[in-house]
Length: 450
Image (cartoon, rainbow, N blue to C red; front, side, top):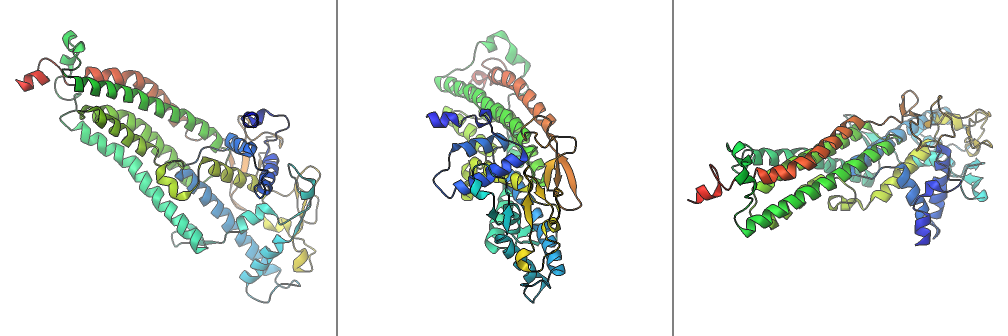
């Protein structure tokens, strides 16, 4: 238990570096330790402090962005291959063959003074991991512009993810809406049954049920209305925390927007649908099944859920993937040519990858820093921790497109959802009891029985 508590808050430990270069060093450290028995909770806690919890939308967002970089880097590598095809050691073949040989040469290239977190022996490592991470996947494009892995197994898995994501998105948008419409127009909707105001008469307020079964059903309904609201409010709070982490990662906006919209919609609609659904139930068992059914829809996109079991990934795996992706981008050059030796005479010396004493990646043939795909903005200090408030980073998708990241997207929407749920948690349970089928007067059970 002592080692577990020590890893509980790794950011409070002395010397923990959460800058971009620090994360890169920790990534290389964990990558080596995962091949041994020396892996611990330290990195798990550290990645969880930087990256949000995982769901199918964020996973697709991460994969989609990774494919964009793979596509851009291979495009650049082919351009370099065309210009360097006459070097000694290059095969006499197509540009693609030359590019493949450049990639193979990268595997044996020595990286001088590589920054690491734990080992002097890794200062002169071979194979440049930030380029290898993205060049390890070749990309093909469909006629409508969708990027897919060229490898058939990876492509099939990614297509399955996309299909499952669309199915889940449809369920999260449509299922609560259709249930709401169905229950709103049913005979058990006691809000629009025509006897709304009579239910506020004193004798109605003190007459809750006629039978023990009705009493137990009402009790179970109130308890689950409270419990589900607590669960959803807790999720909203965690999602706001996730947004603050997500804004620092390099993810595709094509997936982060539907992620926020679908989950916010599901949160609100679940709270609104439950009381209408509970009114149609006659037994406590039905109340339990209704609540669990809606909660399943609400959490269906989470990696930890049963619907995502086929991925064989959990939050920890996603957080590791997300931080490694971010760390590698912080050391990956915007222009591959910055790491090509201008004086190379053979394939063996075409790559020149060096770091200076401060851990900065250098351009080949010079002592000038190499521009990487993720770095602190000009207005920020390179020593700024990535988890700092108002952190601002410059993110390059390719040689021409870049944007600032660090701003928390969709924050206003989630704050609105949080405030709305705070109000509804006090309104819905008592309103559900009061507006239930009356004991006296028009529409009451007793008049119907007579």
